[in-house]
View (cartoon, rainbow, N blue to C red):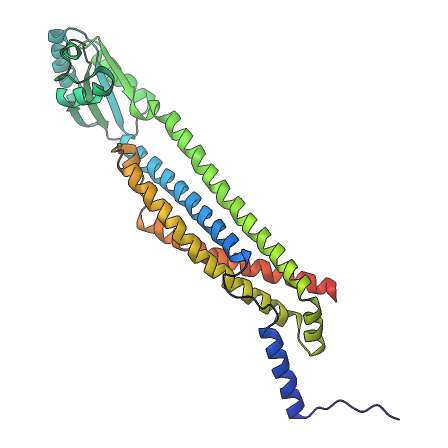
Length: 314
């Protein structure tokens, strides 16, 4: 007896498509935010956003501080006797005014100096003994160009005859080790972001392989019904995409609370270098893109993992 030919009627084809549509929809049944995967993604996104915010803040700090002290030179008159110190300050100011390349000259008032040394020497008002300690006079000089060693040497040569006790320091020179340390921390933050992205991709890869093993029988049935590898991969991609989107939103919310809390703590320090390193609107926009980028990375990883596994399976 001859084998009956398969039914090619429109009704039969429609029932097969409907059956496959139901199988595609239920291939990876999982309620949103019910398994461990969304919470793993939330933790990864939160840590990534915090590390990225730290790197951006450090970068803003270095940029702002460098722009502020790029052409700065500090002149200290360290003469201990008050009358001679005042005389040298007057002659030093006159000598600096005639130097070329000087943008501004400012003699730091004694009140500001007292506030600067109060944490170490005590307040002059509260401790009369602190007034007896000689404090060098400070002259803040701003050059029109970034400070170089030759420019500092020119300033030193001009001050030597009129103010022998003058000490000239380029502000960028003694702050360079601080900037180098901050840049190192910034590279560390970037490395953490890259490592967390790799950890997120690895977690999605393991989750996709686990889901494939759990639903292996269902996948074979879907293949028998005419389903392609691309359609099956789309199911896993969509499922993990929803998990990543939900987990990313939760992770970003947690990161924002931490970032805002730390920002308030550091703003209370009142330090100039710290306060100049706040996040700008472009930084906040980049932080808001972290969950979206994490979702795209998770979906791409899931698709590539499933497609590769299906080729080996069949």
